[in-house]
Figure (cartoon, rainbow, N blue to C red):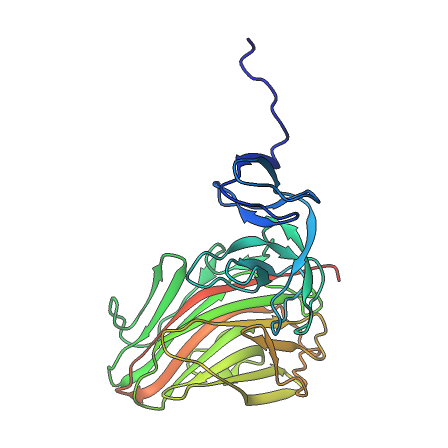
Length: 317
């Protein structure tokens, strides 16, 4: 017998059905990949079933969420539909969206098991950090915790600043979509801490508002409002309440859709915010770099938050 005998293509995984499998049903395989049962006939208990792990499939989409072209899609195991992020149960990654899908759409086309190709990712690519103030491990510090970065402003009565800025960037015309997930752990008791998250052409030692070109989600200490702002050196939109609030300890997902730099669309938890506000960065020279920035003037206020994701993908159109 030869050392190897061809069985089937690697995108065809055969398994024994532990119960009924509906025609076209999405299932997660033992290796973690998503599969669909490419048949018009349902399978029964103990039938031999082949799960297909590649290709583009049209499946149910969760109503009420927007999903952008090329974005990550997850299978909501309990609802049997695609959504934008998993819950803490049996949800799993299913692939990337093919096209833009509106809040009211009930179907979506997904490229199975395809991961986004990020141009920039703060957890992968070279970054720069400059501290202002008295750095102390775990107190006034920036630490990598698994796949997240933890920012800590301490209660020392002094001006402080922590940032993380990617070394590389992209043009305003690169059709970028920026993905951000932040999680405020402790927003303090005072009001002097400011947090700015998103993209900018540079950083600043004391005041993110002084950066000439930026596109930010903005947070104020001891204030659960989530604000959005932009500046391209010509047109500035001051921090504007999105009317969405965060809850300490609960991650918030934000997307900056820069495919039209003259009217950037911002989404919070897969819903468009401030749709009538024109976030215009069209006059920016750039390049835009990913930036997370926290600052305070001299005070005894402390603040803690995590960045779980900050990455950008670009496209020809």
